[in-house]
Amino acid sequence: MSEDNPSIIHVGWREWVALPELSLPAIKAKVDTGAKTSALHAFYTEAYEDQGIKMVRFGIHPIRNKPELEIICQAPVKDLRQVTDSGGHREMRYVIETKMVIGQNHWPIELTLTNRDTMLFRMLLGRRAMEQRILVDPGASYRTGKLKPLSLYSLQTGIRA
Image 1 (cartoon, rainbow, N blue to C red):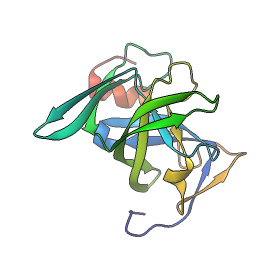
Image 2 (cartoon, rainbow, N blue to C red):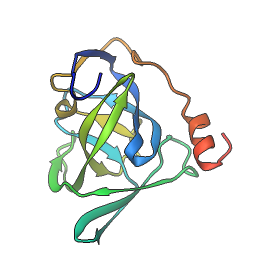
Image 3 (cartoon, one colour):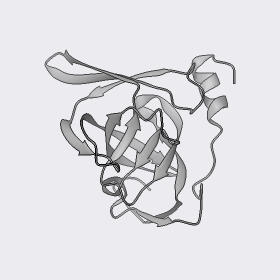
């Protein structure tokens, strides 16, 4: 499926996704129909301007419990928004837009950047990214396939898995 030909895909409550425009070949996402927006782990963010375009540079630890693996990403800033998390805490977050690949499907999604070090999942896939595209089976996991992220990141970064 491409974004021009959307069809409903079936996913579980957790899935492996890729964010190729951010050089992230595999990241585990919690599929959360209770969350409006999607969130991506960023252990730091740095705003800057490039030829008049507002940009954000951010660091990701894409695999939980592997802090030695750091991917530095950059993207145009789409927005700066106040987001309320599930605990009721409000935070100003950078918003970016990037292509998400899940199984054989891909489309652009908005992601807010926040530190998710204390969370089990480095990415949260919210309702806005799923609308008209995804049907969630809360009793299933990895319906779109499993990835081997350590081997993918080893090839990309030279870090031994």
